[in-house]
Image (cartoon, rainbow, N blue to C red; front, side, top):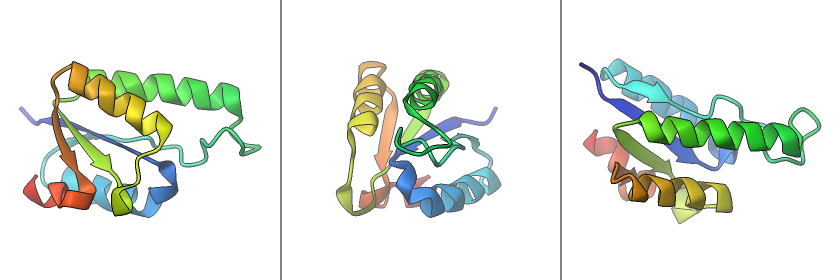
Length: 106
């Protein structure tokens, strides 16, 4: 059985997410990722209603994952990511941080 890994973090790091999606998939992980990278709530393609839906879905991805990898380029963690990270901690998920080389351990 393959482990499910959920990538969380600011969607402004789309390039890193895409790289990790490929890298981790090739290693046999089932990757749960945001997939929509325009969810600031300020974007005309994804307003606040859309952002709320995507945030809720991301929390469900955290819930069903085995591992959470926080994409925190330069240590940046925004408010939505903080909520997801706190939820992952509450659920006692295994958590790695991109900025600390966590992706290299997987």
